[in-house]
Length: 451
Image (cartoon, rainbow, N blue to C red; front, side, top):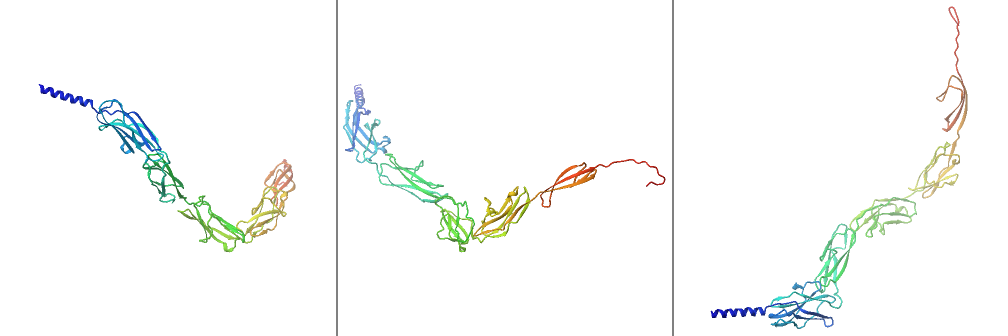
């Protein structure tokens, strides 16, 4: 029984002793920190709470992380420092020795956060945020380059853009291409386009943007082909082609399939044309990826104008139409000027001259000047008006009278409009007397015959 009591007292002492020196890390009290940019140090002060006591050494742990990083991940800790109270057998408020951390190797112009906590025998209180501080100076210079597998491509082709960096940065760089993150990007632009990539230091959020231009050759299409030219000897001639407005297009003119030196624009000009310049002209339109050849156009020399068919006299009725025409050879595009009685008629510049509803004022002598490599004048042609005629017919008939398929049964004056020999209107006046027939009865008696 005595031995049992001793054992019980021993167990009670051990239990009481473990309860008195139990491990109880608490949040730090009076936590302050001062960053000195001149000495490049962070000085932290703090005290152990009166409620924290027990066996084992007590520590104040201090860490520095980037301002946008969590302190709970050990990989985010840049610097750390610790001060120790040693054993804390009684539960009193006790200040920790200062923790001084050198910041000389931190990135300039970067913002950092510091945290502190109390720990004891492998357990620790939660990290307490002490605040932020920013290191003075300029941010690191970005030493970046951007490249492309091709800077000039054809429509529909793809190109790979890449970015690389040299030098030392606070943390890993990420590359943002405007929504896609990576150190390379495959693009297929359909027009010349600028591409941008922004390098971001994930620790300091410092950024730098680069640009790469990818030039895209346009598709080639000929909208207007060169057309035939017929000019006089000694005149100038020009052929042109329309293939869009892109500055990336180039041209090469050909004569009879042979390249013309200097013919490298969308217009080919020939001066003082002679027979040696005649021939077939075309142009190659090149867009870097595609080349097209235009339709051929012929350059020919015009001959002296020659009248094949002269205008002829024209006689018609008043109020009718009249037409003069001329046929000539020479230039493909001859020009004309009609004249009346030697005076030019404004606006009458075709190979024909037309009148409608003519009257006496339109009559006269007409000719035409024909302009080509020289000028030739046609013979004169006369426009005349055939007069309308009138005639009178007096007639008598018994019962009825028919004239020009019209039948009259009574006396009177009648009018008929008839074409005369010239085809014009002729007015016929018919004075008609109609005598109606009569009947009578004769009664005679005869023997054998009656005459």
